Image 1 (cartoon, helix red, strand yellow):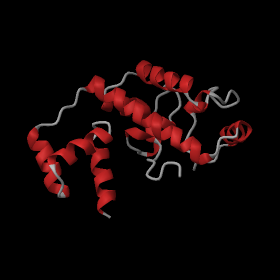
Image 2 (tube, rainbow, N blue to C red):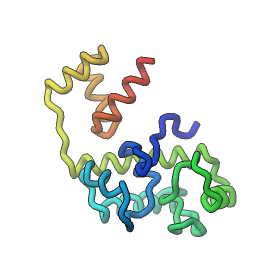
Image 3 (tube, rainbow, N blue to C red):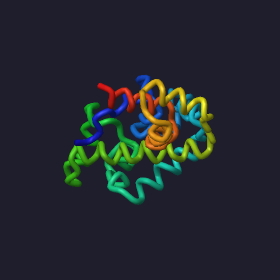
Length: 161
């Protein structure tokens, strides 16, 4: 199954979930703006990804550009280094993308802790009315989206299709 609604890479205008596909923030690129937008320092971002790598298969892949699959790009982007490592480790593209989705969720969860975004009752009411759902369902949608309003709206839109 993989990750059906995976975002574009951050360098191609993707949302904050796309940080799961980013290299370490060691050169000037859009990652710095996206990290600032969600309230994460480059050091904290690196720590989140390295901690995730230690507990999943994404920590493998020594022959990739940065020595770990945690730093690799989206499976739809051709990459012989990543793909050869996935093949040698017996990891399918679907499994790889499932792990990247979990990583994105972890990044967003940590980002929102630092950012401390809180939505008012009016915000929740507006979200609920917009999608014709209860306030509890609106709260659940925000929680499921790591408290990221844009992601919650995208997911609710997909449900309404």
